[in-house]
Image (cartoon, rainbow, N blue to C red; front, side, top):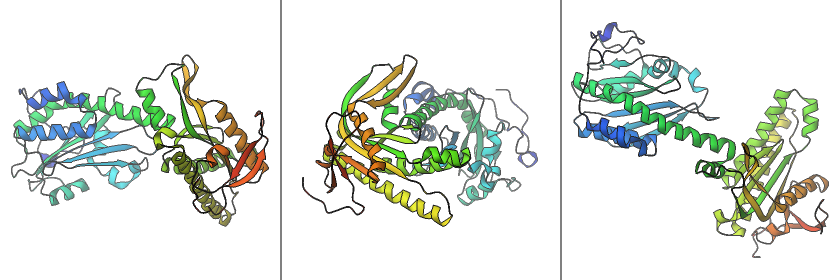
Length: 419
């Protein structure tokens, strides 16, 4: 790095480059980051290790933070703040609307994201610009020197990393140089760990947590599957064709998203796994192995069904007040063996469950409309569940040879019984 003529902080615009001394130090923090940083397994652990190792080398580091963008349907950025005095790591996220808020618009992070090569504010100097609201907070915490640097990734975007001290003299030129020397290696390791995090986020979003982790662990070949026992959930939004014909696409999508949010929220709350959306339907499972017994899995699925009913009922009450179309639905639960894994073409796979038990669940769900019930349950679920269910007798299921006894969840759940 070439030596630049320092620019007085009082004359430096927010986007002006910060001058750093040249550095060529044999720094153990640099060596550790280069050789072992990527094995820490998480961004928070990397930050903690770098911070504590810098302190051990004499750098008076009071605070180290990193803010990165991520690929997530609800989260725009993730932040990590390490407290150098307590060792506590504070992690936070911001939604996609956060970047339009004043707190972001007036932050040094925005300028780093937009291309600033670095911002330094020596708060101990009387004429230090107080051009960012965060500086007042840092001053109140006793911070004397605050440095924000870009963390360039290979996709051309820059993320932000800040360093702060409470030392009465601030950072020395030698200490700033050591930080600057670390940044290329630090950026490379951060990108590796960030990509891992993004990959997990994408797998969770599009495949679900369990299936996503299995794919990341290498189950990516057609035919890689196993037979498991699970409670199968299939639910369906009623009258979707009528809704599609009656309303503009944005309205229909809004109804669909609201419905899915309520259903998926209840399933995840009770540790079920959503596998896919099939048009206006949801396929999910409650694997027996995750609950230690069929009864516990059945109880979890029934609890999710009850929560779904309550949530949709609350939503429909609001829709009635606004004179909007109410949502109707059906939910079916069945217990049986399924084949769980990859199916599809060699280069386009779907991680899902298949088998006669899944087909039977779909047939039970179709009865919800015929029998005017919101939740129907197979005999295999009813016989292991703690909740007393109402028998609707034996019903003919299309494609199933023998009639099956079908049960309904009462509007008001009955007393717990021992089966």
